[in-house]
Length: 117
Image (cartoon, rainbow, N blue to C red; front, side, top):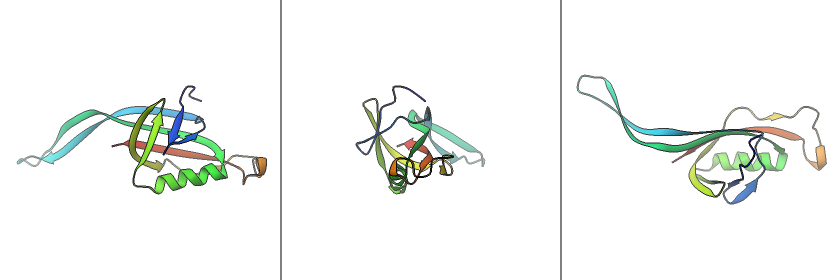
């Protein structure tokens, strides 16, 4: 687990993820030259993105799914807010031997990817 990652999604605090990987990606415009080759013009090098995975309750799983259906979400990590698109980063799976833990419908592994605007 990545310690120190205090994450809020649309101003709602979520627990620390089980795994977390962040990157800064380039934003580029791709166009075709007169000769037919594709050229890339890098606009900026700071488009923030991350992938994370949470083991969470069925209630939080439903919230992650709802956030992935929105056109844009605000993600705040350690006090810095970024707007962007959140998607499922793979398949959601039930954690082994966790059915009906703590009055929930089990614990679920939810992988998420986020790409800032």
